[in-house]
Image (cartoon, one colour):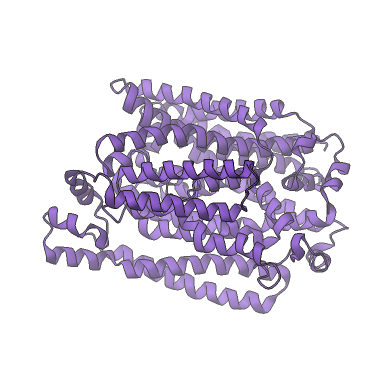
Length: 604
């Protein structure tokens, strides 16, 4: 693809607009670790929410969605649409609790909630496991997508792309801390959305596509793998039960609550928790997560999906992509590369906007993961276990060093991955079975640090067993392996909750006094805390779990109905679109009422 002068001007302007403001936060970020990793806990809801959205809008996300569309149809996106349940649950049950904890990172929570050496071990282990190994895997997936895009558009080798994006991201991540990341995210979001909407528009205008109606007519008469209809937003249960089970039933029935996945963690965690902890109040924390979920699931998917559907007409087979880009590295060829392959049709100016948007997409995610991972390595490992009496400037410097090490490690890992979907499945498998524990640890005193150890060990052991069996010819499908891992891991930690060492009662009482979790799971601790029965009853009424559950239902209904209102409108199915629009209006109106009612109930 050839870039003209106008394209280069737009690219440079995009980068200046995105990154220049963050330079002014370097001095503030260098004051202390609270500023560097949590923005001094003074972030408004709209900035925290925009940052969450921008972070999850990475350079690999359009590639992943395109992969789903080309191999499983639009319905394949239920593998991540199901996480609406997780995200809205965080709004109503966990956002306030995280902000109330006042920890600097979500791993610091372990020594607030648990006691003894087990609590310290879990915090230290997960700081390295998540902050380094897991985090490096995610960043490698993001950078792999950047390498594929650069290879298709400019013929760059992997090392050239990594050098370019690395120079940009490492400089700004080390300099500006979380404040800079938040500001960059906010600006990048609008640039990226403009770029992907333009990509969808021009893909539909291609002569071989013939607009929305032409795309729908052509794909209505084409069957995908297993006879699927590419356009269906729900899987075909009558003819493709295996696909329907894998992409719809499993995600909705099991995956959302049982799997730890960055950005959609049960109970909130990772960089979502980081934004909640950086919010200036509990109300801002709740508002940020709600805004994130609406924008994440409603505003963004359809431009990606439309490009993926158009790619099926332009490049029906992978061989068509190969023929269109004969110099492409064969190791990068996959269905996910169809998205950058479609960008060759963008006109002058818009191609520059897309390049700027893709750089922004890569940076918003990488910057967040560098800052988040460094916070774990420095605050939860280095400061906690190695050097706990140094100055704040020393720890900020350590955070900057950790940032550089993380990016170099992620760049090396890029050479060991093939597609974004491979990484998606790998992360789901690694985190299988731990999600229920993360949901319940706020509401059930019996969950201990040893439960978390048992969950991590159980997930690792069963994954090794499944790997050994596959090498000996006994291989299970992805969703069957996931169920086996979930069952085994859950049994391990539940047995530990009842039969293993218990958390010190003093720690439980202090945790309850600080967080004030609702529900019957803390009844015995409430009494030990000296809370009178009448006060317990008043608090239970004020926390209003039934109304929160209703709000959770309304939030999910609002998001899904609006998502499919847009889809049916694009498909020209106006009757369905108007029905779903009515559902959206009713559910959103009731949701506003529920949120106002819950917030008006003052804490006891």
